[in-house]
Length: 204
Image (cartoon, rainbow, N blue to C red; front, top):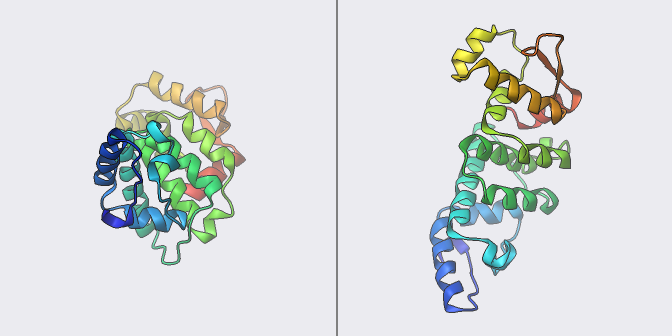
């Protein structure tokens, strides 16, 4: 099989699915092994049997490509296999995620798990937080999370959103304990200690 990916078919239907999965993962098989430290012989069974469909395989491939690029942008030369405690939940969640902004967060988290200086700071809560975020939440967090003193009008124009959309995302980030209220103005916020650590691990 291409790129060291092996699939053990059980039925004709699974064999066909296996070939489609191999095609979807072509080009990231070697990195799959690098990210986890080993490669399962039955990748279908490893990711849940019938649960893994071709669309999910494509999503995983896209996330792994983003992870490779993130490691390159961080100039990481000494990456190490991610702990399976972190990697498996990421793979399961990323398989169902095609939205670019959330895919990017999963890729950042996996890249952090493969980076020695960041992996020891990872918390399992980071995975749960990403699961509950929407694309706009991710954009606001990554682009405005440094608590820059940007005027609201400028921020809304930059993100191409309404004030209501912005406030809804802030409320969700507060509920996830990433942000705290910045006063009586609903558009003001500050990062919580958890939010600062979350950004510290995932940011460039």
